[in-house]
Each structure stands twice: as C-alpha cells, then as structure tokens.
Image 1 (cartoon, rainbow, N blue to C red):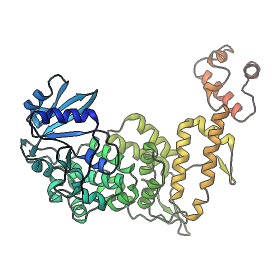
Image 2 (image 1 turned 90 degrees about the horizontal axis):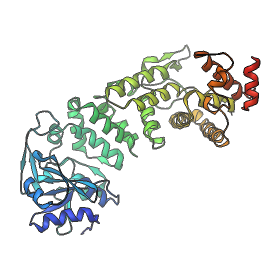
Image 3 (image 1 turned 60 degrees about the horizontal axis):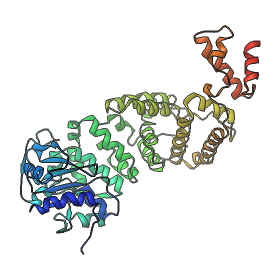
Image 4 (image 1 turned 90 degrees about the vertical axis):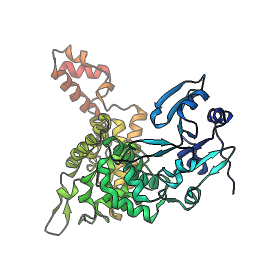
Length: 447
C-alpha cells in the first residue's frame, strides 16, 4: 500500500535543489514517523548522498550554517526556518556509549537508515521514491511497537541514551516495547550512567509527559532508578495504610497518569512521595504514618533536580509544591474555608496554589476509595480560588490600597514596614478590615 506525505514548500525546495543536481534526497526519521501517524512534525530532517561540499554548492544563495560539517550535517535556513541536511553515513565505534568516534560517508540510504535507533525512526520518504521502509517501521507503527533496528544490545551499546528514548517513545506514543528490545533495556541499563545529566533530564521530562507514562514507569522504574537512584527504595514499598491501595512507586505512577498535562505538576508528582520509605512509622495498630515526608521529599527533589541541571525557577516551584502537597488547611469538616484559601494564595501565590490543587487531586485519584471522596473538594478549592481572582478579592500585599510610603508616614521604617503591611493584609483577608484606603489609613494612624 503506497503512502503520500505532504511536505511543506520550504522543505520541498531543499529536496529539489539536491535532486536537480542529480543527488538523492529524502526526509527521514521522526518527521516521517509523525506524518504517517497523522501528526504535524515539529521539524524536518533531510538526508542525502551529497557530500558536505556538494551540499554547499547546491544551496548557493541560501544561508548555510556548518552545524556539524565533520559529521556531514549542514543547517540550511529555508524561509526563515533552520533545516538540518545530513550526508548518508555509517557510524564508527562508540567508545563512550554516546557518540561515534568517527563517521564514514556512504552512498547507500540503507546503510544510513541501519544506524538509526528504532524502526519507527528508520524510514525515509521523497515524492520521487515514495516511502523507503527497509526495517519494518510502518508495520511497527500499525502494531504500536517500539523495536530497535538490528540487535538491541548493540544499538544501546552505541548510544545509551537510546534506552531512555525507548521508554520515552513508548510513553508518548502509547506503544509497547518489543520483547527483545525490552530485555536489552534491562541488560544495558547501567550504561545510562555514561549519559550527561542534561540529556537524562530532557528525556525524563518527555517520558513523564507521555500518555503512557503510568505503564512505562511502573514497568521500568528500575531502569530510571539507575540515574535517579532515590526512586529505587519506593519500588514495591508497601504503605500499610487504608488510604492507599498501591505501594509508593505504583501510587506515584498512577497519580502521574491521572494528572493534568503540565510539566510542573508531573515533575512534582514524580518526586512528591520519594522520601516516604525513609519516613515510615508503623503504630500499634499496624497502620503506617509518614510524618514530615512532604518537607523531606521536597529537599530530595531539589537535590535531584539540581543534579540533573534543571533550571532554578522550576526547582524552586517544584520543591515548594512538594513541601505543601500533603496539607489541606482550607478543607474543614467537608467544606472549603475561603479565608484559608486566601491565606494559602498569599503564602505561595495564586498560580502555584491552583497548581497545588491539581497535584492534590491527582494524588488522591491514586489512593483508596475513601481518599477519592475528597476529589470534589479539590475541585471546589480550585473553583474558590478562581472566584477570588475573578472578583479581585485581596490576598496579597500589592493589592492593598495602601503601600509602604503610607506606613513610613506613621514613623515606621525598615522591616517594620513590611511587618505592618502583612498585619494589615491578614486583617483584610480575615474581613476584619475592608480594603478601603481611608479605613486602612485610619487603622495605621490609630494603632
């Protein structure tokens, strides 16, 4: 069965320049995979039998960046967009399990596709030749299978990052990992220690954002644990509490899959209970308790994310949300305390508070039926916070109708100014003072 892929005009123009100079040229890799799946590719890679100097001659008049010319890659700026064009190549030995020590150019498209990681990424296409699928990638797409090109252990030995890429593609595409590939993932998992922290973090982020993250993380927690060893004590760790139906790691995986498709939410959920094993205390009734696990997990998450070279802003937000994920002081006797919601919004910020409600909702979806009774309360909490925002109700110092200069006019200076503004805000939140300038000035004058 033939297949036709719609190629954007700027990519067609690059292909035609090469073809008009009697070279072969194809789009290849992920853009072919995504096109067959009906997904618009985020970018296009082109492969050709033209050598780098021959490519440069073909692209005369266009801006060309010698991205990795010694490996046969040029970046062509086509209609303002960068497009990588690479000569067919054969990779040499991978002594560091990450990059080939050298590459050898080849005139064979088959040889070029044979060096790629998975069959679904080892297809090429051109309007002239149609789909070139030597390794069964299209069948694997239909079967929803992730399978290595050639011998899996060899592919992972060449580039250990492919181990995490297999998990990531399984998660994002919702595909199963073929048996031989799966076995090699486990056999080769220690090679992940040779991969840079930045690459580990990038692939892990994509993995946890996938629709199949629950199944992949549940099955391969021991693999991710090679590079995030703090995970390992959580696997098969029983919680000994009627509020939980899963062990710590399985609970984490289920909560992740049930959460909103948010980077911050999922990073927080990945680590939210990571210190539960170290905090477990079992009482005289045989019930487990985890006092202080939120604070301890937050610190561990901060350490992990720093080690993985995550950006500081994300680290700070994620660790804050983990620290706060367990407490719900705004839920009292099955009702939402609006004042307590405003105090929480004041403490951590409105956006963070709404994110926290998402985390708590997902957390409870992965617990017992008793815990799931709280789900409507989490929804009501978020609704209340949005009402507070929509109505412009005061929950932060900048919203007060007085400022620091007003406080200084009463004779206070330095830290005392901030303390007084906080005092006034607390009274406004508690509705003991209206947020009206004249009333607030009167309070300052008479206190």
